[in-house]
Length: 66
Image 1: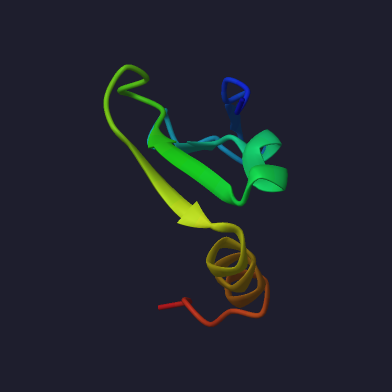
Image 2: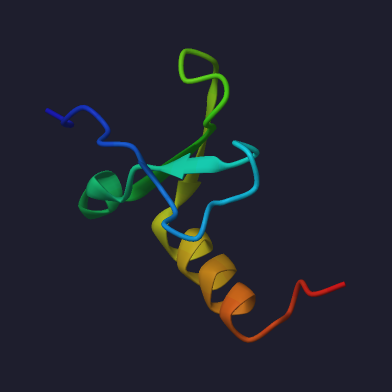
């Protein structure tokens, strides 16, 4: 049985609430759900752990900088 997601928002979030929340506690189950923090009862996108890891690595090296 997959546990309930434990949602967390980045500690770097200081832009007035325009944030996403991530439930990394489900990564051991192969998925990382992401949702809009302004709509906690709305839909969540789910990413495969390898896709999420690749995204985070890209963010860290600036692949998505404007």
